[in-house]
Length: 234
Image 1: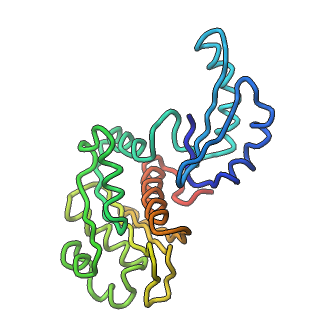
Image 2: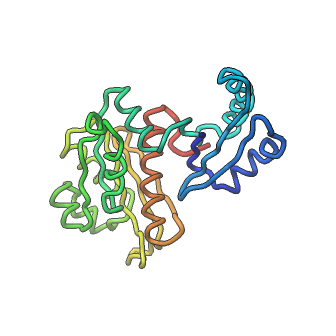
Image 3: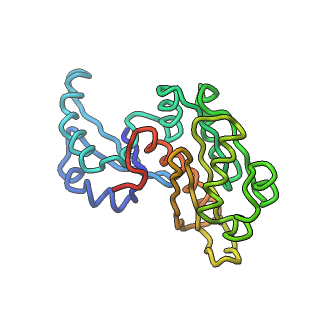
């Protein structure tokens, strides 16, 4: 199984459609899950080695077309890739999110996560952002909670609080309403300190979908950082 994040299913079809149409043995078939696309590469042969040899040229063609949006082969999830990479590098991570703790939940679903993930803070109100994470109140007043400066301060604050090597913050609007600063529902800021990386997302869908995509985008941002890839896909 090949796992892809950052490309829609129609875009994957566009990139790989000719391969899917002509592939018989091996075959290539897409199947989607919320927020990402998976591809199943299968072959029939006289032995496992024969199957691997049949699949290899198609696999490398697929990989070259998908680039760094292909985040894993025969892995279960983005969070598994993140935890594995953190452990390989001997680094620790903490998380803070407006997603109700979804990032922490997904990371701690991975066996062995305690070796790399230290914890997180769900700072759902400005009072907790300021009082627990130490976000300056003048930033909250000047820019609002859903903004680049506050996302950066939140990430830096949770890293100080936990003592982790890396931290990711998410601040945004999952709905049903926008805010008084003109940010529409689906506006999400992600921040990863160290190099003080910040991304702004404009996500579509209902409340649960926005939260899912925000969490997945944060995990992919960490993956790209750990793998020395561009934070924004090229």
